[in-house]
Length: 295
Image 1 (cartoon, rainbow, N blue to C red):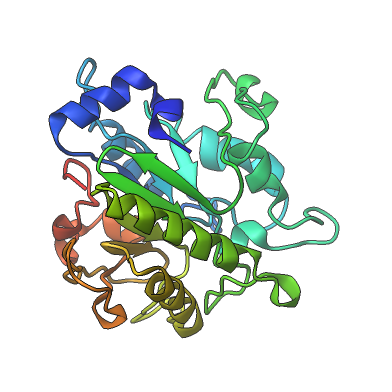
Image 2 (cartoon, rainbow, N blue to C red):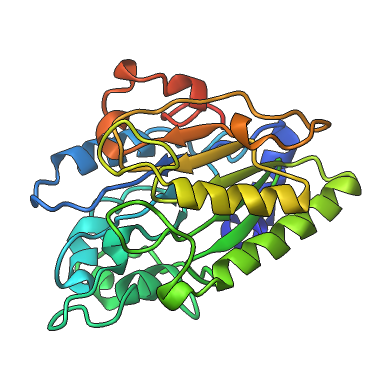
């Protein structure tokens, strides 16, 4: 994917000329309790970052880090748990699925990820009926799948699917399917070649499950190893790894453009909606992941 195809050529050009890019990143917005207060508060705060006619400094997009919907009947819940809360959000919304997006319920959700695919990976952009019926006109996204590469000014963003277990995350699919790992390896090789030709865009990798954890989801040692091996083989690595679903957010210092990749120095940011509501409790400002900060 290219940001130009998502927000238009003029918007992407304005970001390029500004010298920096901003985006929102939030996850775990699914509402197991049915209470919408937290989600509505965060959506309102994010929407307030936009100013008409300021394409260069507006957030370029919203990256949803997964668990859009919890529980049964996911297809229908997209109306009240996705389209309604972000009805006034002006930007486009990209996403990677979380484990709850992939869960299966025989009677109501027999196919893993179907609701996520319908809304984020549609064949063409269109307003779904569950939104249009209540006067909401957000279109579906047309991502190529549940893992993808977004090329944007100053940024290459890789979104990965860390699968359906509550934890830890794993890039392998059912029956040890490693298609996603092979895709990641090939994509990193291509990005390294581009870097050698002078492409100095920062690389960020995003997963739902965190590589490290102090609570909530367990850390994902195997997933981190899979990412590290792919990065080491390609000779390149991310400036940052974004993840969700645990009560802490930290940032480490990433390698400079001329340094060799050291997996031990991979910076990891873990973020969820609850902790975005109370950023003073965590060092989120340093991440550029709260409304109003450059990323």
